[in-house]
Length: 279
Image 1: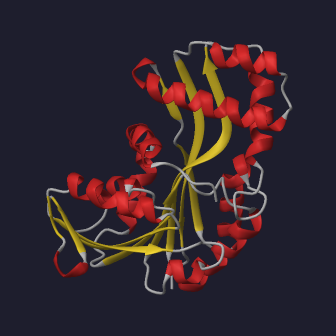
Image 2: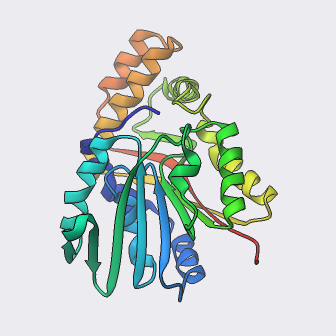
């Protein structure tokens, strides 16, 4: 899977957090109300943004395992998590965060999800979670992942899976062609086989439903305005660079598209909550 820089993850974090679907987040909180302790595995954790957004929904005693293949991101997570917490303890080789009345024990695991999925998941999780991950993986990986979670009978909650909706303000004549080319690029192998791209939310829903999970989906689109100018600019440049690699749009159109000063954008995402059948 292609890497992401800590700076990019920092830039998107405020928008990620405000865009999460609140109703689905509350459904997660209701499901785990009273669970103590609660064991959570966060896949593709980056710098810990998903923990910072999800832990406040859960109970007073949490054990998180943060998994990523990029050691630099795992290292970068520590100062960001300790800055977010009200207090912390790093003695004894473990990281313990205190946030309000909550105690959150954190361990870090470097793992490649393709080669070491079982090791990444471990055997004791009640909840497996991720953010902005599953549009990068393949359909066969989603099937294998679902089977692994079903065997463990654990819940699944993922947020901000790209769903294909893209709108830029102001509009440009090349928008449709650019988006089509971007989706072609997104379908390339990111390390898991051909990526699911915008088809990922449906694949997740269908796969977990087939495993007899109760599945809910909800909108979590980025809705970007003038206050998000830095993110819009960075997003547009990355989008245009990906389109250039496909040779599907002429260079002149890409140049004028890239040069347009944008005041807003919508990038569609879906949150998914899948709960296992009653034991």
